[in-house]
Length: 154
Ligand SMILES: [Zn+2]
Image (tube, rainbow, N blue to C red; front, side):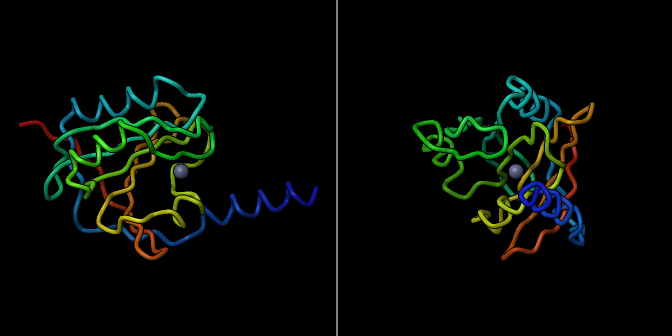
């Protein structure tokens, strides 16, 4: 009983923080956006993840990376694919995306605590709604700011 109550409180708190919205946006081509969605939808039983390479606020490449935890509630990127993706980003990812198979479309307490790249946009793709919710956030020293996600071709 106590454990369940703590989980509910934590879940509630994750919805409560004040979200500011930044002036800039992260821009995908529709093909890139669909590629990212296809990767996370290919397995709804675990969080799926990857990096975005690019310049300024334009995505240049979607780089799927395995979730070595194979967990529905956590992710960790590692292995050869992670090194290759980081190399493609010059070790400065424009974005870091992962799915929440059942969780809310905002960074979890763990996501905020483990956000190590203040310049990256953290993209959360929540699969508990149709179509999936895709939202972006900058996470700097525990402060969460929403970044608009746009698709533009040409
Ligand atoms: Zn998460």
